[in-house]
Image (tube, rainbow, N blue to C red):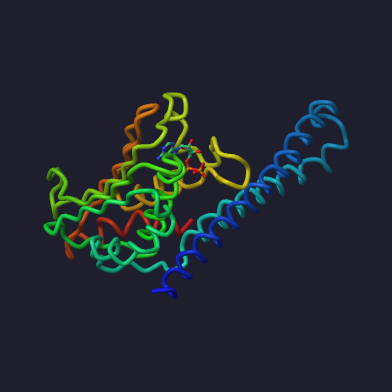
Length: 252
Ligand code: ADP
């Protein structure tokens, strides 16, 4: 149990650290890129100094690609998918999650026994749950209720039924302006050091890689519900279904 807690916390901090380094690095790159562009304008395109300036811009662009790759790597400690019982994963994390939200916040877990196993990367599931629950905890503060729910989604695809994972809270909610930016990497309304702005962006990307969908409903002062629609997939559809987008994403 405590080993599991440690692993979850370590994963969380490795991800956070990588994200912070990437964030700071990107800011420095922006200074380099921005100023070389200004300098290029200032010198004019027929200046002989341009031959020194162009490689700087190209190197900065390449460095930005490296940062992108670092971020992709940070979220993939364990690349391989396996059949995951979502209810079991949640149950295993129950104590970690309760510890995260504190004893004054009510954590309700409602698992639908009817959901099917999904072909996913278990650490991705863990990261998604931790991120969503940390956000919900930040939103409710010292008191409130956080509900984690699984259920069979309304059948809308050809193969196996989809699974719905829903995390809702009775917290502060979001304004429409905030809502419109939540999937942007590095967008955060939290104090520096409290938020990286990568939680929902990462979740959105992971879920999309697997062909799923993320929706968020929120009302200021009332609370927020994040719903993930996750494709459960059959063994036959696995190859051309859920795995392919991930292969494509990591193969670039
Ligand atoms: P971070 O939590 O590091 O700021 P996220 O990408 O997870 O990054 O969230 C981005 C922003 O979305 C948060 O800063 C917050 O303003 C808003 N947000 C996310 N989840 C919730 C929630 N459950 N309740 C209220 N606001 C939220």
